[in-house]
Each structure stands twice: as structure tokens, then as C-alpha cells.
Amino acid sequence: MTNALRGADIVARSLERLGCRHVFTLSGNHIMSLFDAAIETRLDLVHVRHEAAAVHMADAWGRLTGTPGIAMVTGGPGHANAVGALFTALGAESPMVLLSGHAATWELGRGGFQEIRQADMAAPVAKASWTATSAATLGCDIGEAIRIATSGRPGPVHVSLPSDLLDERVEPDAVVWPNGRDSRNARPLAPAAADAVLAAIREAERPLILAGPHLSNREGRALLARLEGAIDAPCVILEIARGMADATLGAFADLVRHADLIVLLGKALDFTLQWAAGPAFDPAVRVIAIDPEAALLERAAKEKGERLALGCIADASEAAEMLIARAGTTKTGNGAWSREARAALDERPAAWATIKSRTASRLHPAEVFRALRPFVERDPDTVLICDGGEFAQWGQSMLPVRRRLVNGVAGAIGASLPFALSARLVEPKAPVFAVLGDGTMGFHLAEFETAVRRALPFVCVVGNDARWNAESEIQRRDYGENRMHGCELLPARYDEVVVALGGHGERVEHAANLPGAISRALASGKPACINVMIESAAAPVIRRAQ
Ligand SMILES: Cc1ncc(C[n+]2csc(CCOP(=O)(O)OP(=O)(O)O)c2C)c(N)n1
Ligand SMILES: [Mg+2]
Image (cartoon, rainbow, N blue to C red; front, side, top):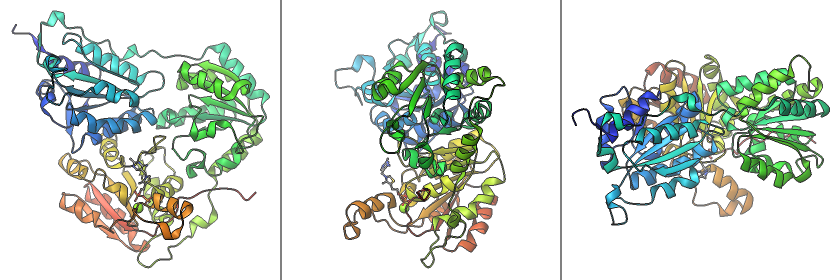
């Protein structure tokens, strides 16, 4: 039995074999065997202060690299804490795997320590969710989880690992190791289907290609830019819960009403696009759906009826490559429409260049992002993270970047600080900025300790208006000025909290002081918080005068 491996060794070595480096984790009884097994591998355990943060970090890793992020948490309450964060990863189509410790198989149904139906709990927020059943095949569980997470429409996968299987010893020749990463099964777009899509685009006068969050990373954006060039039709990513009202997309809402053909390139037909129906659309608009999932094509067929011109099963990126290849040198689209579309997407109100706060010792969000813009533009590898309600929406629309992480279609606030730590692990040099509201700052403030401990510098810019303003705005609009309550906060010294945790912190009350504060935060080389006192401002909405 001397060469026998523990189940925990099989899990750790399988992760290593499949190219995983960092494991975002928080310790707990059920997974201490995995912590022990990691010592014999090159795995780096990045241990954090809340299980949801571990999931958010794996999510950010998945989004930025396209390779699976790995989170590992303990069973029962650790798993329960982690599950909520999967919702964000699911909405963002992020390839990641959550491994949760779990009560021993012999305890199940007997009131075991922290026993709960973990796989059932994670199922609605995961692409797949199961409990491992044998020690010898734990490597296959890991391989299968990674394959599912990275295939088709990427997304989170959960596997629960019962503690007795992790402790069990298996003879080496009985271990079934996972296949390499190449086992990902890509679904190409058939050439004939690509030709049919291109013919429809050629026939249309105002075609619009819409992609989902999966193509929002640097590589996805570059691919869409190539597609736009090859077919001469605008390609747009819908990646946040505000959908067509995303101010990042400029006057998109005014553009979309003129489209006569919408090609969904792996973009789910959902609320973000108002199901391509209603007053925001031309009633005659036709839709083509290209999607890796048959269920989503069926959903599109049900929604659109005869307006669905074509439905094809294919991965979004594979389909984009095939469309580029088949488009060849014959221009497909309509140059004037493409130029008009780009102008609408780039549109920003001229007033944004000069808006100033009307409140003493408070900045307007536009002043904050005018100051931040030159710092963001300095390095093309800069990572921008936007989180929270109204404040960060200004940042999203005012800061042009190739690499950014946003709350996403899930519309869940709170992930930005874990995202920033993970982004720093992905990107060793270029600045990482997190811009977020003061309410949102509270979700994972303790991760500054993780950032200091692991020497992961980034700059967070908090827009401090002492309220959950997105919800205050709803109260003002729907219930009246005199019925606004339950959304106030203190103008707290988040900067001082960060200093206490070992980082750099400053408070800013005047626009003139912000550039200096940003320079000092970057130069500190520490995780930094610039606590900017702002006046509450509703998120920007860009509409052309009708
Ligand atoms: C997990 C989660 N909880 C609650 C909400 C509802 N919500 C959306 S924005 C927001 C307010 C955010 O406040 P803050 O971070 O201070 O940003 P502000 O709107 O004030 O700029 C809230 C509570 C949500 N989207 N996600
Ligand atoms: Mg706020």
C-alpha cells in the first residue's frame, strides 16, 4: 500500500495535470485533506475571507483567461456561502468549477456533520452539479467538470467531494486519470449554415450581430472586431442586466429599432434584449439564432415563431470564425449602416465633458471618471472592474478599455474586490482598477487583508454617496421623494479601513485632488482605496432626441 494515493491526492494531481494553477479557497474540516495534498503539487492555494469571494475569484479568472477558475470550499455552510456567487458566474457565462467538501458517504441520511443536499442546492446556478461516488474516479470528475465548464456556452460547474472518498487510499494502477484539456468538444458552424447566415445578412439592409457575455473578454472582442470587418455589419455585446440601456453601448436603443435582421451569436434571447419584441423594435425584424444549446434555439423559436429565419447549433466563437472564413472577400453588409451604427455606439453626450458637482466637497461621478480616464488609457492591458449601482455605470460608459469585468447579466453587486485580486493574478503588471459604490464596498471589504497578505496591488475607487443609490432612485421615481427610506448609509471611512488592513487609503472631496490621489495609490504598490465623496447621480441614459 506504500504507493497508494489518497482521493485528495488524485483531485490535486488531476487539477495540476489539467493546467490549473491557483485554487481559490477557504479552509474547513471537509477539505483539509485537499490542503494537505496540494503540498505535493504546484497548486497555489489563494485563501480568502468568505467562500463567495473564492467563487468570484474563480469566475474572474475564467472570464479573463478563458481557462477554468477553480474554487474549493468546505461542505455545508461553506458550500452554502459559495452557491450564491455562482449566480454571477452563470450569468457571465464564465468557465469555472466549484469543488465543495461534503459529509462522508457513510454519514448520509443519518444527520452527518454539515450534511445537506449540496448538489441539489447548486444545480439551479450551475451548468452541471453532482456528488462524486468513488475515490478511484475522482480525477474523471475533475476532468468532466472542466470539460463541461469550458464547452459550448461556458459556465460554472459544481462537484461535491465526500470526505471519506478524499481520505480513501487507491492503488496507483486503479486510478483513472482525466484526459487532457483537448477533450473540450467544440461545435463548429456547418459551412452551409454559415453561407445561409451570410446570405441573410447580405439581403438585409440593417443587420445587427449580437453576442453574449462569453465573447466580452479581450479575445472575444478581437474576434468580433474581425467579424465586423469581414462582414461589414455591426457586432455588439450585450453583457449587463441593464441590457439595451447599457450606457457603454451609447445610443444603442435608438439604433436597434432600425434593425431589420438580428443575428444572435451565442446571445440568449432574453430580457436584456427585451426578446426582440415590443415598441423598441421594428415589428418586422427577423432573427437568426446561433447557439450551442438546443434548448435556447427552441426557446427562440417559441418566442419568435415565423420571425425566426434560421436556428443553428454552434459555439459562438466557432461560428464567428466560420462566418469570417466563408465571407471571404465579398462584402456582406451595408457600409453606411455600419458607420451609422458605430457612431451611435460611440455617442456620448457633450455635456459629460464639463458636468460638475453642485454640492460642496462632493464630486459628480463624471468628474471622477474624467480624472481616471488618462490612467486607464495609459496601458492597453489595464483591467477595469465596475460594480454596484449608479456610480459605476458612469465609469462603464466613460472609460474605454479592452479588458473589463462587470456585474453582468446576473445583475448581482458585490464581486469587484475579489475580481480585482484575481485580475492581479492574471495580469502581473498593468494597472487593475475597481470602481464601485459605497454600499457595494461592504460585501467583500475583508478581501483587502487577502490582497495585502498575498501582495496583490490594485486601486479601488469608491464613489461614496452614503446610500444604496440605485434603489433610492427607484424609490424616488416609483414612490415619491417623501417615501425614500431604508437605503441610507454612513459616509464611512473605507480608506481608513483599508489602511488598517495594511493597504493604502485616501479620501478625496475635491476634483482637483483626485489625479494626485490616483498617482499616489498606484505608486504605493499596495492594495489601495480612494474613497471619493460624491453626490448621488442617477446612472447615465443615452438617447437621441426624437
Ligand atoms: C447581490 C445584490 N443585492 C442587491 C442588489 C440590488 N442593488 C442593485 S444596485 C444597489 C445599490 C448599490 O449601491 P452602491 O454600491 O452604493 O452604488 P450606488 O447606486 O449608490 O452608486 C442595490 C442594493 C443587487 N443587484 N445584487
Ligand atoms: Mg452609493
